[in-house]
Length: 565
Image (cartoon, rainbow, N blue to C red; front, side):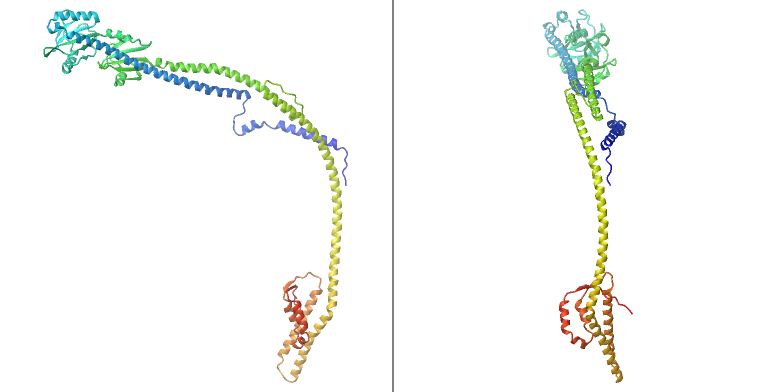
């Protein structure tokens, strides 16, 4: 039965509209895949494009600033190292200047020690020479006997020399013992009570015996001018410290530190001949100290710099880095936001075009300042046109396919009905043929039985002859009174059994049921059938041989079931 094709085009358009509306509703109800996936996986939500551009620009700026910062840091470190080395070099220069000053005074003492007036014990004339040197060089000359008593001094008039301070007794003893000039530590004078130090020259021998010790007494202010001539940078402080750690000279605030003991930190770190260290001064400030030991005196020349001043290059570098970061960062952030906003607008237009394609609408060409976005917009417009053309083609194809499906369904239904009718007719014919074949087999069996009746009767007659003949022989033997009749009984029984077996075969052949054939030895079966009695075999010897030759190979037959009457 065929289906009515009332209006397939109208039905197809309705189905398409329903499918389009369902898909549109599903798309609107479906969550944003990246956002939902990020939420399910515990990730951060997606960021706007402007944020991505900002991250990109910052990512490019940070390594640049880091590289510049490393360079500035290295420069600051090298600058700090340069400052440390400069401090140490300045301290060494200060110690060399001090040694040069001491060496000049020693040269003066050596020259004065060779005065003829002193050799002639003309002390007034020698005193005049001492006064002249004091006027010219600003140093006080002292002449002492080896027992420590004062002979002459430019600090007092002739003949009124004050006794030598007790602090010089040890120095005088060392000079007399070693014969080498020695510079004392800082001490107070016995007259003016001012801090001074003396340079005690080698013993003066008049003849072969040491007689006098000639010494130069220097005010500490004399060395201040020497240290200031080194022209230290602003904020740098130069100082001289004697072997006992007493401050002798300081370029700044001389009166507050002269004659006072230095800090324990200074005494701990200045054990080597030269070096530098970061520590604290007497007032607790963090300072950088460079020092050098005088080779002539053993005094320590030091240059002290405030740590903040020493690390000023590093701080300047950090400020420069921060300033560069601000100067470069603000424009970069502005550029990033500007570019991001421009690209964001272009991407929004692309998104609107893609949404229009999804809705099946026409897409206009997208024009933006970004070339790649324009190319994508042109591709979207072309794709929208192609999609619309393909949609129309698909609709036409769907209509044709629906018509074809309807016609095909009708043809399939008609053909199925024809196949069902043919199948039923074939089944009836097969059943009729099976019935006819069963009847034909039965008729063939009966015909075979009729054809075999003569042979079967002859065989059955032979078996009966064996039985009857054996019974007659038994009767005759019994009539004569003989008892040897058992073998005749056996022969008669065997013939009866053979007749019964033949009867069973005939019954099996004539019944209407499927056979269950089994392999048998035909020669053995024929031999058993053809052995009714010795006299019966003699007439059929040739036939037996022929049967044996014809049944030379085994065959399959159904075994005879014993039947009991």
